[in-house]
Image (cartoon, helix red, strand yellow):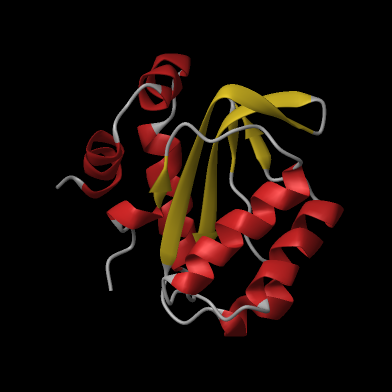
Length: 140
């Protein structure tokens, strides 16, 4: 199974509460067969104990250790908020839901950090199409 599917890239998202975004992006991972539904609660638990806002306008919600067994296949989902959303007092414009099986989450995080390491890269992605975002993450 591909790590990222085009149907899991949602551009021009409208601002909403952080918890609602986490549930929505978790549901995308679930609907695509990456995780069991209970993984979503683990994503919310992670956010409640440790913010997944990594700076530079990016948040990477993912589950706590206790729900790692609920991951069926590694996968990501991307939501782009051109107007930004408030994430623990900071503005976030790109939210990437992550489900990494085993140690694959480290490779996924490294790939995201590499692709979105500069403010310009983040700004470019905010204005990208689904196909362009897909190509950025997959090289296809």
